Image (cartoon, helix red, strand yellow):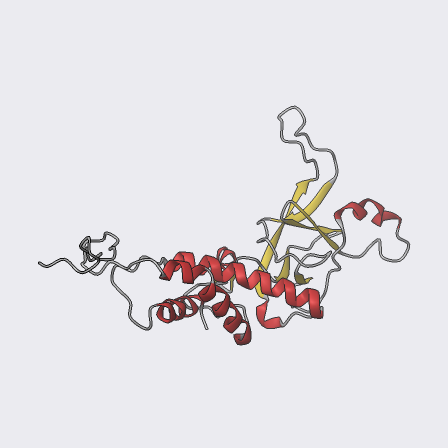
Length: 240
């Protein structure tokens, strides 16, 4: 099921299957709330069960690595090569769902999808050279939404999968020559049982407020108001 299908299903539910050409509920607003509830429910499920289905993951395809200086300063006087060159992804990674004490990156590795690169905190990289057994191995770490790979001499591409807050941000990545995601054609990364919970949450809160306002019925693109029947001083209806 795509995000567009989930969105228009919600619009049909709130309007009882009857949609006006001047519908004042924006599909983009519905999509925003769907993504918000999805991230919230995924975080809650992980906190409670410690398990996440692979069906909510998204694949970023082959991410190109580039060789950059590790200096973080931006001013012209300080932006000089330090001699410490590191490998990092050319593109920033989308923001992940907030897990407990960890990034929601389910796989970092080679382009085969099975050769895993361990993910470590960025502040431990300085000690890797002194590790007796693994100092020559690949290690991945994150700084400012970029993924860095330690000891990646000769490694040009990596593959990353994860659970991202906004699935549509994955659309900017390339998967075999096409976008990795599309609202109208790509399956929305969520199990069907969670869609029911999202529908219930939105219908009882956000859409309940929006649905209580008045839809334009006279085709003038101005919000209609209720017709108030005036009453006489004695409490009865006024005669026309």
